[in-house]
Image 1 (tube, rainbow over the protein chains, first blue to last red):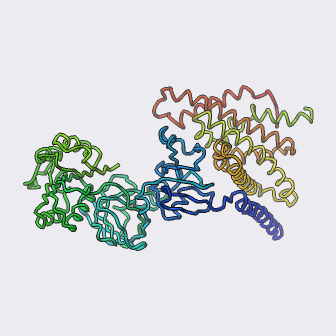
Image 2 (cartoon, each protein chain N blue to C red):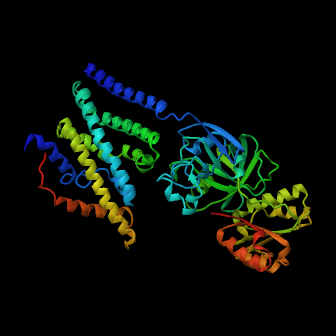
Image 3 (cartoon, helix red, strand yellow):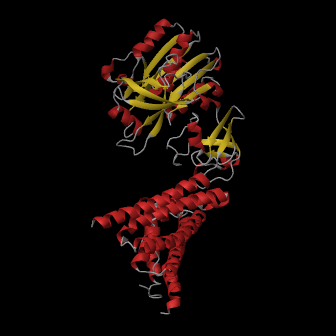
Length: 368
Length: 197
């Protein structure tokens, strides 16, 4: 009895070891592509990486983070990179994600495309600054009945250098609603000069993977991974008057931009329209009023579309678009910054252009 | 039946009367997910045929020369799975190294095949039916071709189906399973043509 047991264990181990050995040998010979050089952005950086791995992994290993939502399984189609030289054939696993135009201009899905020979690739410059940060939740507070402010303290690396208005990707670990870690993008509400902290404003979306996690599970002291900063939504370097329009958690990047302007002592005239349904959807009123008091150039204009009887609301009433239309004069000399839902943004762009703001001076960050 | 012709009979039986997919319903997952286009289904079909034919031989040898002499037949499930996995992995690496075109056409499907139950099923049937080495090879090859035929037919139907109006509740896997059932019925017409155990 014991002998048969030993024989069976022995045989199966022998078979497994033999096959494993075969795999190791194959990996070291057939699968060994040596070291290859990846030239990023025409020589801006030269990476020497082990060949045979997906480009996304190779870049991550070198500290260059390409935004990706699925973690490299080829199911989100986000991690597109332009391979200028050394690309070769497009794989069937990439095809569903690439348009005809992208195929022609050598755009590849970096999680499927393997690095086997020397390459030249082209990525947006800002991605060089993107890093992954290990953070700890310092505080969570309710801004409204459905928006929470999450303040993260950066641990490793301890500092981030964003431009006010940019966003980070928040990693949700596997839990009840997801079997694998997923990433969701949130704008930073914190002032960029506070390099050790990131503040996010996260509104609960029913069944939203990240928002449910943040609202139901995340507690102070928890570890959170974020990567960033990303995005081209930030204050332009001009001296025009500015109009800011936001709704709900669209407050975040606008708040960051306004605080940054205040700190830098910019004397640009700014009007901030904030739209909400009723008084219970308003938040950070005191902070904004304070800012108004300290800065004669800044006007805060919250507006309620459906104030409740008990709200006792004395401010602006109506859809944010109507309020903007009532107050914006002489739009041709101004520029505008919008953040909110796609519907709100499209409607606001229409109103602003009617008020004379040139369309190429309307900058926005749409919630996707 | 003529002893020499037996492997040939098994070969045709595996394609038509005992089609691994349509009579045993094995290998359904990739059959359902990769049968949207004829082009990709051809790639997968060829890859499955190749892997089935080769792993059947490998597993026959492992079974008859290693497991049988030690009386370890009951270990065949585990051993067959690791043999298939290791073999497919190595073949993928070779293809990737040797030919970019072949990799784009075939290699990409290989990881999908590792977990294809039809491959393991063929190796297990070969043991149950006590086939010889030659017969096993033809059985593996035939089963692979049978699977290829089934997925090719399904891809052809689904390409046409893309332009048809399917009731919302039946879209995707639903209608595909119904079609697979009808195809299985059609293949029953072949039964009785060749009789093998």
